[in-house]
Length: 258
Image (cartoon, rainbow, N blue to C red; front, side):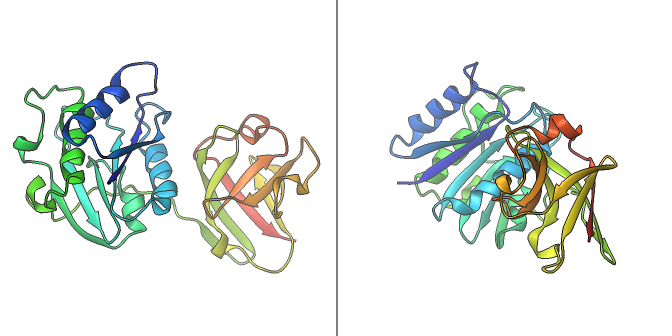
């Protein structure tokens, strides 16, 4: 039994996600479909890419990950599938797959050009239903990967900001705000010194020290921790750091060693 995950910006109010599941199950009723997230902000490629990269390593080998964050649907952007040493990824070639692929050993990337795998009538606005879902479903039946289309020589990669170190100062920025208002940065644990007290600053304000857990700080005060993604995140114990500190994606972070 193959697993197919779905990550979209469709939400659950409309019929879009349910229709994709219907297409998949119509082709392979034995596969298991898992909703990774459908609450990605509309058209936010970086947020969708972050969610996929954070979750994909925890799924069984040979899982098929379908991502539809696709503001360029119906335009010239390509549709691709990538095969790594442990998973398959299907989605638009707009960079949304690239952070997850950076964590894997990519074996081959192919263009989705075999129209025999698509639905008969392809809309200009819903390739999740008409292209990505049926291709994933056919792959879940054991169809050979090369049948999806010709090999691609490259794929679009997101130009995500990189942290920088200068002496005892580490600089980075916020990449993602989760539903709790925690602000996840691009600073990995490996970049942080193992000795000394680390102070975090955002928007010219003290954002607390780097601690082991949220409740190391008093309720209502800022604290920074290494989150489940392995990156530094800024939080408020019992509150929203994004609201309290005015944080958004792209907000600069500065870490100093006391």
